[in-house]
Length: 251
Ligand SMILES: NC(=O)c1ccc[n+]([C@@H]2O[C@H](COP(=O)([O-])OP(=O)(O)OC[C@H]3O[C@@H](n4cnc5c(N)ncnc54)[C@H](OP(=O)(O)O)[C@@H]3O)[C@@H](O)[C@H]2O)c1
Image 1: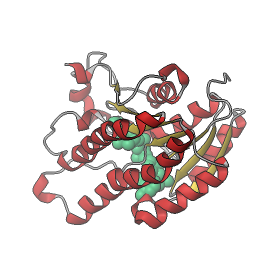
Image 2: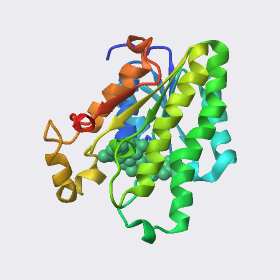
Image 3: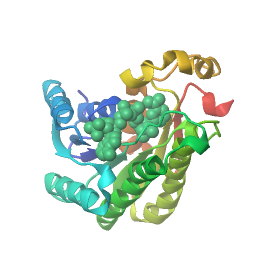
Image 4: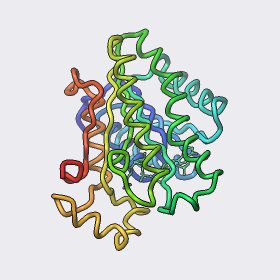
């Protein structure tokens, strides 16, 4: 274990599974106290236990980010209590992944849910956490975007819209909080083989064949980009998009 993030506290939303779990483990491996969050307490406790086994420090706070301001405020308050003050790192990672569908077949309820979890919750949470970071004069916020937020894809209008919004939020927040010492950046993964996404390997094969590296990313590769942007090695990086996509966004 190295110690680039020793003494810092990080909240990672949606870290009970997938990329979020890899981010939580990678931040903890650098010495951060990680607050793991999601709806599923059993999965969250398992992540906390695995981090402890690896010699790291983690706590779990349950939150359903579809619950609007009361749910988001509860998470922010619990995170501030665990940190004993302003957080050092916030990773807005939780998102609803949406099965491709023609626009005309997307239910209104799904639109509301996707916007609530992927956009509104990150917006509200940052509004509750960034000002305390700014008052102290330091902090790092990393938003999980996607190549889907950079390109148009037939059948993916809803998910892509939510991710494009995340890319936009990074830029606005970099301008809003940067002068106070809070860096805000995006990590934009391409197809990343979590267990869930690996099950779609056949469907994703044509997309992966168009990637310069000719392979998907791993959750650990995405997590390394987050660790970099969270730490002092990224000291003057604000408002950037770091793609972890095998080069897909470049071609
Ligand atoms: N995997 C990819 O290929 C890929 C590519 C580009 C970008 N991304 C982005 O990377 C991030 C992580 O994706 P992933 O593939 O790891 O997703 P995932 O495996 O589906 O995990 C999503 C996480 O979000 C949490 N979550 C979902 N709804 C929630 C809610 N209402 N309240 C609180 N937590 C909620 C889930 O926890 P609970 O079930 O415990 O609530 C889970 O921990 C997302 O922002 C996604 O858009 C992923």
